[in-house]
Image 1 (cartoon, helix red, strand yellow):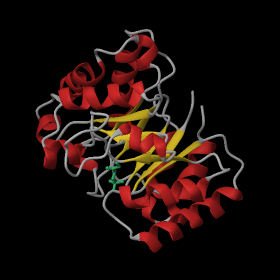
Image 2 (tube, helix red, strand yellow):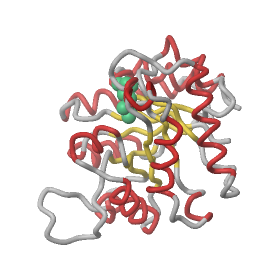
Image 3 (cartoon, rainbow, N blue to C red):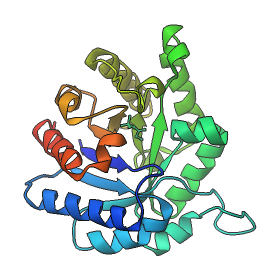
Length: 251
Ligand code: 13P
């Protein structure tokens, strides 16, 4: 299975900070013998410069969001063809922060995924339950509903080109990580959902306070194939260390 470590910078850095962070990551990766796929998702204004900086390396640049339409009167939005035209290769969709603060539903996310696949970009689809849903024992049901709603309409060919990230919302930016058992159980649940559709090749990443001091215990689990990293991706040393740990855990 492919293993992926992706850094979601969220709304952080500025032009110089982004350039320095990319430089630091590239320097660190140069000393690493790894087949792990590395993805960097800076904010929109720094995407084009990041694409230039990583040219000639295996690093893929991802956007953090996109609009479903190719062009038109959608003030403030960014389309998939625009991203493609500057060399962006992937896009995070359905992040819980977009669901929570911007009202994104699985129906909207499904259309964004269609647009990305149409233009050959890799959707990194995020799913995950909030704390109350886990406490009520509904977490697997919630994630199944998200998978059905955003990915259920895809043909097997198209589904095989998606990357899934399980991010329990209660673990994002909180310092609380899912225990290895909680993470493995949900990843196995997602894997079973994929298997029902005869898909074996889609990596399922873990996200939520994933850091060098807890990553080894997560990346080594049978159904986890890398991570979607927030806070720890803002430090080049931590991020490269996560790539190293994922390399050691590759399976
Ligand atoms: P943290 O690693 O900061 O918890 O963020 C995870 C995340 O939301 C990545 O998309």
